[in-house]
Length: 636
Image (cartoon, rainbow, N blue to C red; front, side):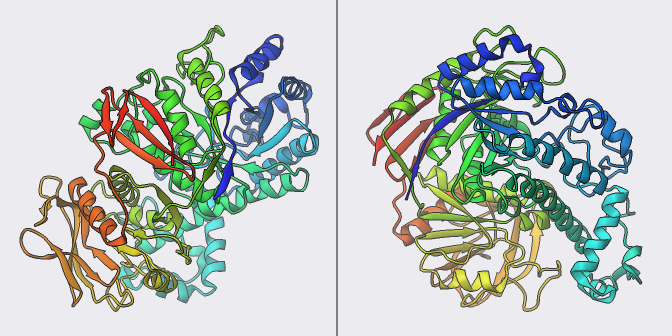
């Protein structure tokens, strides 16, 4: 159990406002109850308008002004927005999409992670910033770049990526025949004679070899890790302040755990209303019902995920305080939701909730993106809710985080494998994990997310490992040895490390006599009913073996099989089946559950129990009256 200090912050862009109002802004931030201010992450052209012409005076003054008001600065490296002159110097630095089109200048994130010329420019500006501010008393934390992967910018099909991919393949396989064997290139005469013959897996006549595509996604993830590590090493040599990166919602095309291994804490950018339609996977009726609240579980899953990525330490670096500008629809949050979202993050262990942004910009791409202030500096609706949260956390008792008793394994490599071979329209690893997470949350459970590299499961009573298409033997052995109830499948161990179907057939799990003999994807209008209620939707497997059949489909086929404490789920359960199956496993594990009403969620810390009502109606649960759009906190 670890003690938590809860703080608030905001994102600020002094370069976008007259210097004459900076001091007033800083005073108002402090009066609101903010502690942290993130600046600098988009300011490269203002810092260096021409090559080698460095202008630090304005940033010096901004940092001093904020610090003098008692605020702490998170300084962002500006590498997400290289100026036009950098592109003129390196015209081939742009990322290229899968259709061969360059991702051009005129917005942001216009670089390819594999371009060494750009990486060198990045090293230089980061080094200059760290030289100047690494020992500055007001710079209390650093952020590398901004939102890796946002706008589909992780995977690039540029010439630079092709050359780097070939080097990566040489390092990984050593011998071209080893690669041919690993990828099964005997199929369709795809054998290569040399690594220099290997192209990128796009613009092929039909789908590329899935092993080739998976290797390219792994390479692309490694390029993000390497790019970030260069910045971290430069900053660490010059500053002792902690370093983070602000991840995004449902951006899974690079390994956040691998990036996070080089950082001191994780952070992410939470936009509940923006994510509802295009990322949360919510059904139309849920999008309607939660249009002004956001999905009750989508943010929570990311809170738990980034707590794991940060090894227990994490922030919300950007919290939506009002309407955004980039979603299919952009409603305003209901009164009370900014407060609810803030406390929800704290309930999941956040050290800081930082609102984006201080003042709404009257120009450029985000002029319809709300801030805590309007463009005329008058308060926007979110300001008072932020101030209310600040007053509440100041009066709150000491708090502590604690290990949950339920865990879900999350693996970015599994997400890559599903993306390469979903086997059915709309199927994704993230979607499967989210569905099981929702079922657990609907039963009032608090959940830890664990990386698939975890081998010690001490303290957990229920562990779910859905959809892990590759399961190393060491992970199988660790799960088989734990005292917890374990749920694996569907698609558990369905591929080896190089994306071939293994023999013996999956899952080949120790002590569990279950074999998946074949699989099928299901039409959305043809679910497979289960005999105890609910159905498999989207995907199911044919199971054989001597393990006990716990559930069957309505047609009599095995659906859930068990041996000892290990259960295998042979399909994608709908919400009814998922909640029932999880509830049964909780009973076996001795875990107390509660069937929560729609829109009600519960979360435990080491010292508190939180109840969140995401609905517009009053609800009574376990003797508590929960007002509409509310947070209720009780000691444990």
